[in-house]
Amino acid sequence: MPKITPPPHIDKILSRLEARGFEAWCVGGCVRDALLCREPSDWDIATAALPQETKACFPGLKLIETGIAHGTVTLITEQGPVEVTTYRVDGKYENHRRPAGVSFSRDINDDLSRRDFTVNAMAFHPGRGLLDPFGGQEDLQGHILRCVGSPSRRFDEDALRILRGVRFSAALGFRLEPDTFSAALENTGLIGTLSGERIQAELTKLILSPMAQAALERYEPIMLAALPELPYIPKLLDAPLCAIPRWAALLRDCPPDTAQKLLSRLRFSNRETAQILRLIRQLPLTPADESLSKRLYRAGLSASELAVSGGDLIGLGYSPGPHIGMALELLLQSVIYGELPNQRDILMDHARKIM
Ligand code: ATP
Ligand code: MG
Image (cartoon, rainbow, N blue to C red; front, side, top):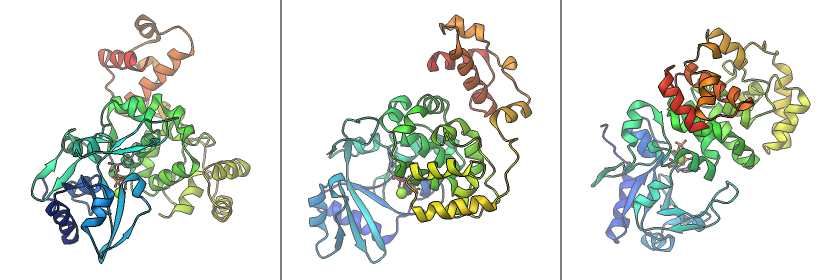
């Protein structure tokens, strides 16, 4: 296991909290990135201290309290801002949106349980080492994105996690584990319940990631559910790595009024919308040969070569009709994308799950 060495100012914050009797850990993305030998973008701290208790531990230090209702106190250190967040248990999810209320906890395991993927649900403390209750390390080694707990429930609670899954796949080159992938597909309909701002922020991170193209293509059905205005996923590769040109490349084959409506739905400002529309006009149309059906065809696979047939699905209890075609299409995609082997027993098992 690679050695995790938090920077000295993070060590200091951990020690200060612990010296006052409050357990504290580095959590989430920084632990994941450190284990992958990547430079973490920021070091987040989770603690048993309530926000007021955290504040009292750092007299004289400048603080930002905007996140305090959700348990976050931002410490302004000489090395930059550091978020210290009280352990949380999320409250009931309403309308597939964020919890109506958060409750605080004194148990780090509660806090790790509410996190989205196993690789994001680890904690590290320089003295106590790694805390990994959901097998995050193993999934890191396998390059796997697996939900903490039941994937269907976690995506139903917050559909943004579906897009985060594709985003982490684009950032890290990881794949969604089969149950997580099928739950993501089943719940794509919930993406429409998310606010335009949240979708925009997540998709911007996604299309700016180094492996965006591969993730967009691999998870095309998810992307087309998030952006139903798109005729298909185009090539982004020649667009420079900044947000406005990347969005223009993504929307290049949308008719201008469709693109404009999409940008307004995702809450882009008038200025950004104008910039993106102007860039789209400068890009040539891409040939429409990258659609899913064409790629299936080129992959040399069609539904007839799948190890299960429509008849098999009826045998499982599927009612005859369009459901069968949809299920066969999902199975076919999973096989083509390497999520599942083309083996009858495994596909039947999967068909039973998505029924
Ligand atoms: P990055 O390096 O891109 O910032 P990150 O893992 O730090 O990646 P953030 O969006 O900053 O991602 O979130 C921090 C942590 O909070 C995540 O690692 C995850 O544990 C948790 N988290 C964030 N959003 C959600 C969510 N919608 N559902 C569950 N857990 C989440
Ligand atoms: Mg982060």
